[in-house]
Amino acid sequence: MTSHERPLESVLETVGRTPLVRVHDGPEEVAIYAKLESFNPGASVKDRIGRYMLERMLERGDVSPGGTVIEPTAGNTGIGIAIAAEQLDLEAIFVVPERFSVEKQQLMAALGAEVINTPSDDGMDGAIDRAHELAEELDDAVVPQQFSNPLNSEAHYETTGPEIYDALDEVGAVVAGCGTAGTLMGIARYAREQDPDTYVAGVEPEGSLYGEFFGEDREEGEYKVEGIGTHDPATNELFDPDLVDAVHAVADERAHEEVARLAREEGHLVGSSAAAASVAAKRVARSIADGGIDAPSESVVTVFPDSSERYLSKGIYRSFEEWEC
Image (cartoon, rainbow, N blue to C red):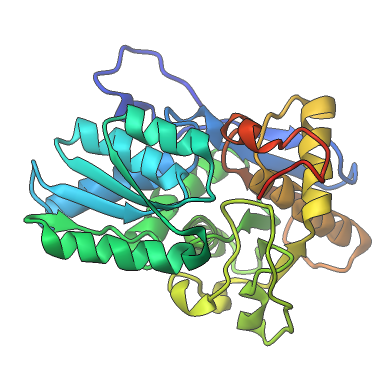
């Protein structure tokens, strides 16, 4: 839990130790809890990997103080890396597809990073290719590459997972969105070490293809939920199907409804990926309550990755038709 009882030397010391708060719109007999990652200094779960990855990469000599980190990112990872880079004497460049949140890009620039946009039609693959091209052009530059770097999931194994179990004696199920899948994989590995029977579920928008890892038919399509999902499972190298029981697809309309409900009824100002996670967590909780899922305890933990303030310019609280992707 968030508890700082002494003055701190750096903003990096405030990363993690976020609150775990109950979500009340579920079955009474199965408690749902959400890790509120907007309490991090950069207001998202990606602050964890920003700090952890850069510290480990400096220790290993992957990059030297004064060097440059270049990352393809939809935004939150860029903010987390930018915060850490400035404190750790590193330059930061981010390659961002044009369609992603203007707020995130402005924050990355405010933190001293350079932001380079790539065409929306090229997707994250185009941003990844451009990041590697830039790294080859510069001296002492490295691409942390959150989509394939094991340090991503390791950050959550070392921090997020233990924090959850420090707060709860038992966890029946873990439910988290899959973008890079680092958050889910790190927590899942830690949870399964505590109890091998822990139920683990990923979350993706309808139109994403994570379900193909389980041989399920998924119809690829565009989606408005931001920060999770994949159009090319081959690029999601961190995802380990052996650690996951199921991947729940959530329709944009349901996520949009839940964004509004969470704010109105429970005071959670969260983004659409958090809303999708909430929808899936409630599904899992109901299935535990009905006996459809045999979980080791009657509790579900999910992650609310960031704040809705990152998406106000895209109309996240306006009508579904006005909400921009």
